[in-house]
Length: 110
Image (cartoon, rainbow, N blue to C red; front, side, top):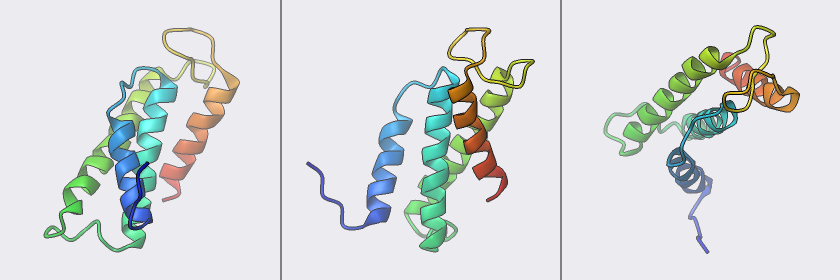
């Protein structure tokens, strides 16, 4: 059991944990990037992501890179029908495509 002193500590730990998982399919890529985006949002609300003297600034920079990398990887995985498949399948999956689009919408509206 882990007890966190606040929400920021919990989100940052989750970001670190999910980022350790392999990212190969669109679902995994989206999950890593989405968690990083959520971490950036929490840091921004706490006004702690831009101060270079803050030890969390490096974590924020890493999270930004994860979001950018995820976006680039997802663009490469998109099928001609606009959807996203699991692994190397050529058939787009509706639920996965909805998940990816929800993430992309969150990136664009931030």
